[in-house]
Image (cartoon, rainbow, N blue to C red; front, side):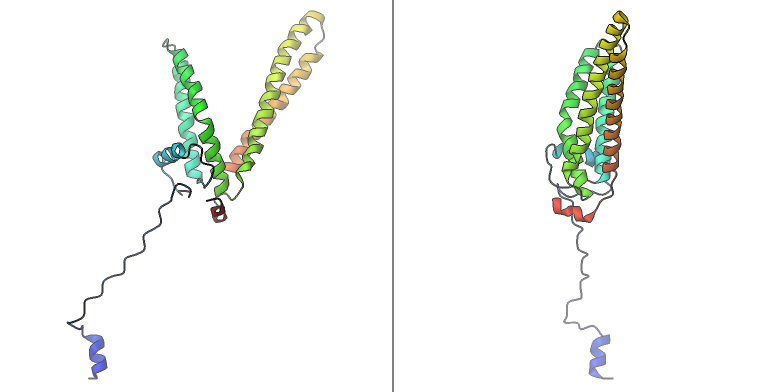
Length: 198
């Protein structure tokens, strides 16, 4: 046998055995990277940690779990408000405080969700603009309808009532359009190009 062949088949007793090369560790998502398949608990933690952070990205699961959490807390306060336990005013106040406390983080996570879909966060102005104009038109239409009904009863002219109902209806349509736009934008798939917002 050739010496070269012997070295290849027999281990050298003076050489340390080869150690297996460890697999590289997967990078952990930081505060600004999206967490695909985010759990309910992690989504809530990230929602509150990113209270007013508009940089970075948020995955669909992170966004929808956080929205479910905020809805469930609001719904619980609303149920307790209607329970007739005598603490209705307290739960009504808590519900209002909850709504105020979640405005900024909801806007921030929506902004980051758009970044994950490689869209600018300013697209949220479309949604909130539709909401704002819709609510203004709806409430002016509602108050106009009440005023129109009162004056219509006294002088028999219902033109103010019909115009106010039309304005309220258009306002309601704008609110629904804002809601649909929000759902469509938040359901957009993740796009790796959104990393430019990190």
